[in-house]
Image 1 (cartoon, rainbow, N blue to C red):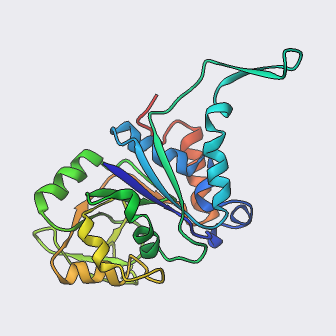
Image 2: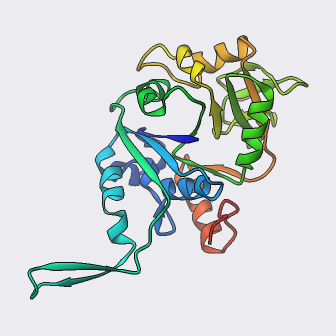
Length: 258
C-alpha cells in the first residue's frame, strides 16, 4: 500500500527555519522530520511513498537524490581519474515518488494531483509534520472492517485543532473547524483513504480538512480510529524543541527501528 505525505506547505508558524527549507525538512536530531515519518511507516512494512512537494520542493528532491551518498562511506580517488567508491552503503527499502503539486495548492488539491501515481487503490495519507506511535496495522484493519471511504486517526491533545464528533459506532458525525478546547477528539492525520475520496475533491483550492471531510462525514463515509498513545504535531518552535528532547534522551515513542 502506498503512503502519500503532504510536504508542500510554508510552515510559517515554526519560525526562521521554515524560511530556509520546507517544514518537513526541519531536523529532529540529525534527520528531517519527514525521514522520521517515513522510517515509522517503513517499520510496519509500508515502503512506497508519494511525497507532495510545494514550497522549496527542490530541497526535498535534492535530499533524496543524495541520500545514498550521504549515508554511506565514500572514497574519492582523484589520482585515478576522479573515481568514487562506495563502502558500507546504507540502503532503505523505499520507493519514493516526488511530485511538484504547486506552490499554493491546498491539501485537498495536492492529494488530487497525485492521483495518477496512486492508481485506483486504497492508500495511506499523512502530513509531513506529525509523529505518533499509532498502530498502523490496527488502523488498516479498522478501516477495512468499517467499510467507509475514509478513516482518520483521532487523538485528544490540548485544544487548538478542528474537533470531531464521533458516535458510539466510531462514525464521524461532524467535522468542526475550530476546537471546543474541551478534550474533544481531533484529526491527527495517519489516514487510510479509498479511491472514491478523490471524487470529494474539486480542485487545487480545496482544503481536505474542510469540505471533503465534512461531506464524507455527512455521507456516513468517515470513520475514526481512536488513538490514546503518543502524537505530536511540529507546529511551532516549541513543538520542535519537545520532539528534539524526546529524541535526544531516547524517549522518542515513534522510534520502532534499530
